[in-house]
Image (cartoon, rainbow, N blue to C red; front, top):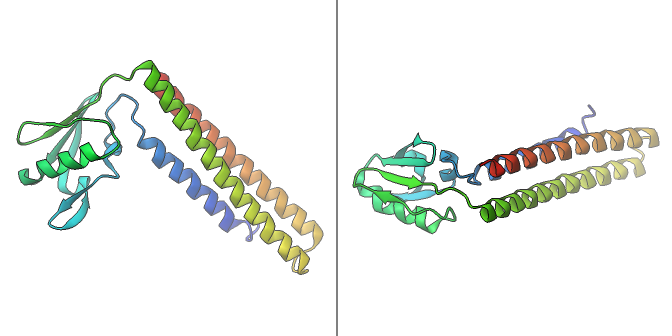
Length: 184
């Protein structure tokens, strides 16, 4: 692989990683502790990740159990969950908080699949923008005679192959997530 292509491939890899993170936060009717990854709780004046102040487990397929290290945090954790876009109502018994995931309706599943496709399309656009930036940079090197015309063409072809590989991977990720959502 040409050294001039590497930084652009890294940017494309980051786009894929971001997409995978976004997909992890989409709930599929099953309890997934990663849904809580972005939530932060005020812990002695510091916004702290939920995982740092509580034990998070999945005792049943559709239940997440959050057991704070300190029971005084229960109210704060509940507020954060209610304020989030998870659409879940926490219940607690004074020691642990339980999040029960309702079965997804058909309409909700279709809505989630649309969201998955939209996120995939945004990721493809980001990858194509990286391709455009890479091609522009390579053409500039060609114009300033740092690269021959053949080298420019070769590198552009390599960039296109990498772009195609990542677009295919995005499609695959979107299809897998859509299948997961639509599976009842």
